[in-house]
Length: 117
Image (cartoon, rainbow, N blue to C red):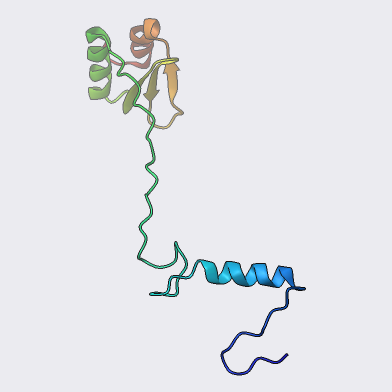
């Protein structure tokens, strides 16, 4: 049973697996493009939208704490600060690791460092 040219060989009924495979290969082909669905640019797929987690609620800094932090920054004692909801304030000091200071102890800590609080 040799196939001649471009014709497909005759498939016997005793070869059910080959028939299924051949039927699967040809069933999805579009006669106009000879492409399966999902191949090529004709079909556009919906893009996944990445949902960003909601931003945390802003934490209010009291006016006295803000004034003390600004004064310490202007004096060169600290280089940056950030309010952390769980730990208090994270203070960045030149040449040292960041320090976490409780809100209630901030002014005493800055005075100890030499900041104008």
